Length: 170
Image (tube, rainbow, N blue to C red; front, side, top):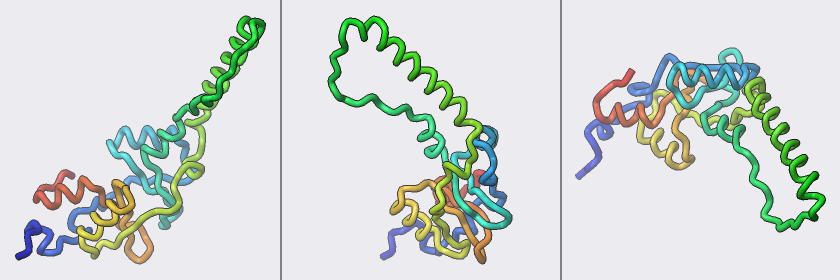
């Protein structure tokens, strides 16, 4: 006996649950503009397109990696009294200025420099089981849906859950 939900047994297709009106950006768009777009549209990932071709994808995780501050090394260092008074505060000031500059520059950086170029895709006529398996295997939250090599939609974990539950959230 097949214990899968009826929606899956009846081979629900990616096209049945995917988002068709996909929010996209271009590789020359700035990180700042894409962050605003993600916030305004309440989405966590955006396909990056040139013309009608998907060339990458940018996600919240990609943007968070930009903001990650490198941790200091665990090497033990014992400063001299002179270094304590003069050099250490100066080094800390330089590090702070460098960090402030890097954070400011993050927003003006082009999305093409941080996007992932290895975009996982699936076809609209594939089963949602295949989409779910691919997401789990590759530890991603979304797949680009391509028809004849062109962007047809995007499917997220949320789309699959809503589809299985019989609800549309869009």
